[in-house]
Amino acid sequence: MAQQASLSALGRTTAGKGVARSLRREGKVPAVIYGRGRAAEALALDAVALERLLARVRASTTLVDLTVDDRAPIKTLIREIQRDPVRPSTILHVDLYEVHADQKVTIEVPIHFVGTAEGVKNAGGVFEAVSHTLQIRVLPANIPDQIEVDVSALGLGQSLHVSDLKLEGVDIVTDEGVTLCTVVAAKAEEAPVVAAEAVASPTEPELIRKPKPSEDDEAPAKS
Image 1: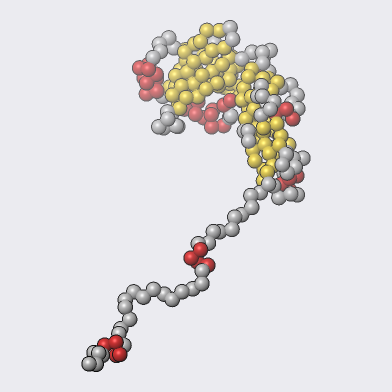
Image 2: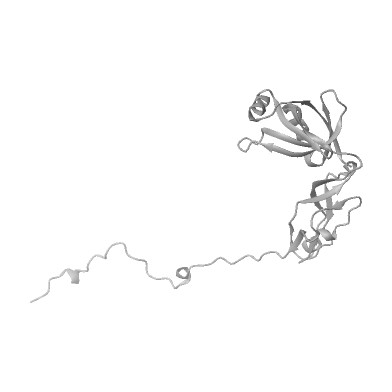
């Protein structure tokens, strides 16, 4: 089941970079809500309330009951969060999408791999996750927090693809040929390369200075 959260917003009639900067100085976050059959509407969200919400839920899979001014709450999904590239903790803008109970929505859900692959347990292989999210279409009330994929039967050299998944009440949008995960053989450790000089027969150490001449060398030649 989808996670639930609530948020309040104020409608606004002005837009532009100057207005956005003013809102942020006032502790507000510029936002917009849109959806099938409705015109886009500019909003202002409380920055502190928004940060608290994002700290406890996964934004992409959480249904948000949004109250705009004094109107009745509407169901929405957070479609996009724009953050300051220099200060990622600062939210610049939020896009919200109104959803309806009887209309499926397309969302991206994280994949959670469970179990230990047979090829890892019994054949010394290494598990590699290739994909980390899955795009699906689902009714708002049935939005999963994550997609669990059991990898226990995966042998050495085998892979799981989107086509291997069997999900109830969910339409998979991601191409069925996409690889989710695989088990590969562990890489053999390469022996360190030893320089040829290091394995050659030892030689006499190089002298830093010439040896002291012997007495015979120093004696003058006899006439």
